[in-house]
View 1 (spheres, rainbow, N blue to C red):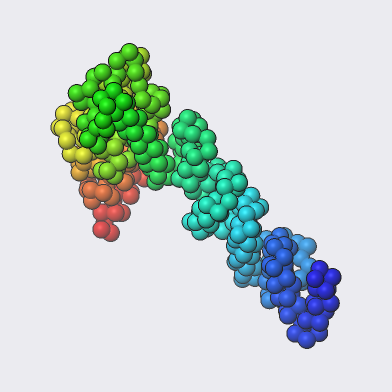
View 2: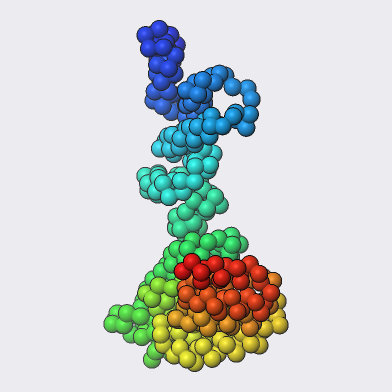
Length: 384
């Protein structure tokens, strides 16, 4: 067939013209999985449709408009075709070279899911694309958890996920949270059954450990304590009530561990399990007043510190419990203009959008000397 195609192209050119020959070549290259060459053929076709030389030796930037835009659009379509073809045959890294410019992350993620389910040998390449290229962090961590374990996942999360979008972090934390909670629940149930002679009826960690202090005697534990502490810390970003209850359940177990496994935390979560439990309960509507008072005191005590975490936690708590307007005032009071912060707490403009209180945004911006924030509040108020 490889030799016959040359004759076929000549025959197609004679019968259908150059365009027919190029389309026949494209069909052949697709059937032969020669997607790099297919990409080049599609660009040749695009240039020909614009009346340009098929053999192009200049930069695309040299094209006048609207030809340049038309050829660039055709180039993106060629990228999709070549990239998806390469993905379909498992050539993951080559595929991403074409698919990166298209921005079709959702479609690529779905195809990666299918690929790895069909062929586990592709896991390493899929992890690279899913995680390091940001195509689907959840998929990357799922494969990493399966192939390399929770310890590697935690290390990778600490090193790579802090600057990623909050939605991506939430998906990954959910995966890690469900994994460690399921493992810990199973291990505790097995221990109870072994020591009592029958399986327990309780279905949560809090119920299992409530009247069984002997589970922790002689520094006994049922999962790696550093892994447990890390996942509890990560769970601060979660907002789904079901997941918050799972995280709270972990703290009920963690706070009963021996002092040997009670590692100091960072403000405002000094006592990792007790203080995180305050946070999770508050978001679930439990003991909200006491938690707000505690986190406010922590924020006040850190107002002059470089680390804004205590302030952000307090502001986030206000925002997430229906007090976005108060969160604006407290942000303005506690965070000096220009102080760098993470995305744990919403920005002043996000808080104003949530509350609809643009007067508060304008007042806070005026006090902070923030002309941009003032203009955003004024404009939003005027056009609302």
